[in-house]
Image (tube, rainbow, N blue to C red):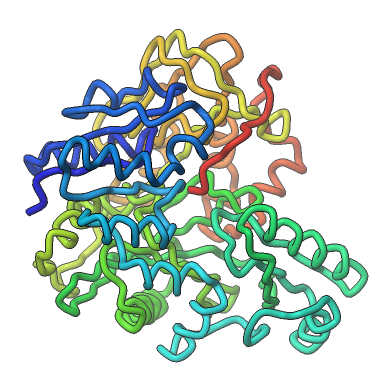
Length: 468
């Protein structure tokens, strides 16, 4: 077993990793920027290292500073969390060359799957169903338009190196195509340093369903069921649940087997997530692989009883999976609400500040993952995630009721602080959501209908969001 871990991240996921390590008897070293000196993980970890000023490029994205911190404290391994450098093959490679165990897939696997075009080719060879689209990057607007006309509108134009819901445009008709193509290539170049894009068919009224996989270094792979992530705004998830509702057992089984086949074909190691689009006929199509722990991993943990972070560490230590596929039997339903410091009444504008009072819900089968506490000042330059409220119950209706109660109990107040709690409560009360037959357009429809939380405006937008 690995004996020491540097946690190369911040916020709630840094604290989550530190807790998993403590249960395993592993020494932890946290890192923090000047802006995060008050972060809970700084005092919780066995040691903490200041790695630079607030801007992420000078701290959490500073590979040299992270490696030096690991050397200073003689740690064996690095856990990247999610966002920041978690899916950066260069960081994984530097760790490997620095005799540090990277708790995640090998660098080359991250590179292959991080390139959406390369990932499509790997999964096509593995037999996974793909959406119709370009076989590779399109070289010009004219070529892209030819593909779009061949497969039929509407289409998605997607950045090859995209992630975190960014680098995607939907062109509903030929008239909108040229502008969408130009915007996507420009954004891809600016955000990812790679302007390559590809085109694939856009599925209307689709569901976003993902499958959690675990693969070890001994050639074993299993899946732990599905999560539905369709409650999202501009491709950013707000609420997740597992198992995905109203999916036929046969579809779940085929989707799980496809995910494991794809993971093994790619040489995957660790915890990963296969994302699929599911259409109205319950047919599914591969979208992408997330080569890291997901923000919504607690959903799977509550229905399976498997600690995914500890599994990551055990796999990175060289242990073989002890859990067989026939032993994975999800029980009940779990929901996760991401409570962000944002104002839904101002287009979800970030709304951070010092939290003067902070109360988290309790009661049976309610879990809260957060790095906040009374008196905590939430920095305005990072991701706006304040807390994750997760609730489990034997049935979906009971889980929704329990989550509704938990959101009522959640309180975070302070000058300038606003949260998405009220909006999430409205999602839970929505008839379409409660039916289970919702899709990725749900939030847009709620926003258009004026379903907000009636909070007052405050601060400026986040300048450097992570890419969770």
